[in-house]
Length: 459
Picture 1 (cartoon, rainbow, N blue to C red):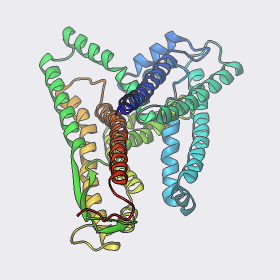
Picture 2 (spheres, helix red, strand yellow):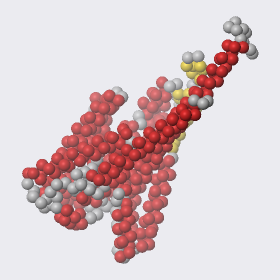
Picture 3 (cartoon, rainbow, N blue to C red):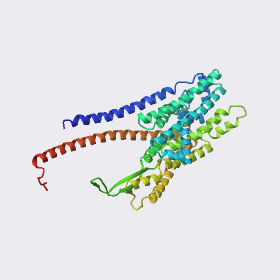
Picture 4 (cartoon, rainbow, N blue to C red):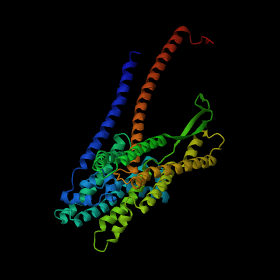
């Protein structure tokens, strides 16, 4: 036992130091991202840019600026944000479902996923080039550049595309060396950075009489209730009991066991809200950027119709959330694959035959859960839109931002707890092995001393 104490202490210290390094890397990456949002694109006139955003408050620019963490408002080198990467991921997921070749790559394990990731990166580069060129043309057409020459076009396009690729790389580094989903944490950081300003603007508007103080308090109370509702639903699970048959492994016989198979109500998380927002932001932003060209004013009408709060925007946003909820859940949770895995492990659901019947049963459960989960995400994301109309107040932060902040926070905390539990589990296993080794050594030595080789065993 004199050797076990420092070993266990080293395991505990090693596990916590690994978690500390990962958390410090996440903080460092978010700090780099926030610094990058304040570095402007060369050649931009800040006064003209400020006037443009003041004239378009409450429109599609505010939503795009929220997802970019204020980088678009400052026209920084990270103005495109993670939207090119998200759009490329959406397109790649759709192509994976449509083409069997890409679907087979997804099932080939790590090597296939690396190829899909490579294709997603190429798509991100292509989309970033298109969006960077369109944004640069809009900046020059709106008179936001000091000198709209070829040097400005070259510098701005290269800077914006490089910033989008850097955001993609930073998110992947957080996935590999940090804790949590990198892209979600970057979006979370950008949204949270706007919280103090939004709260300050609301309080200032109430102080000046632009907003009714009672309505503002009611909106705050409803917002807190929505946060509690989101936490309650995200913590809920549908557990299906799985029985494992008695099996023999080597000389050891394992008795039948039962374990729950958990399914969350919202298995897609915040992905449907992000994907739906991205698909609506892409055509609306393109229409607003290219709408300044001669003969293209009809694109401004499209951008106006797809602005937040408009009926068509609400309808398409709700339809997009429901579609991506079913699409992403079907992509990540295949009932046939789950049923095949259970059958290979000798597990079964009581009263359900393994194989096809198990897959049909799981498909029915997942479909019902996804339906209620999509309705829940739609209500949470659209409720602030109706609150704006009912209370006649201006909300800087919508339901999508609130949902992303709460869900990403819960996912981040759960992954931190998993890292801590894994380190504690390793410590307990090492402690158990040391004790078993000590007892085995003493009993073996004692047996050799007390009995001969041919001595009969004690009953």
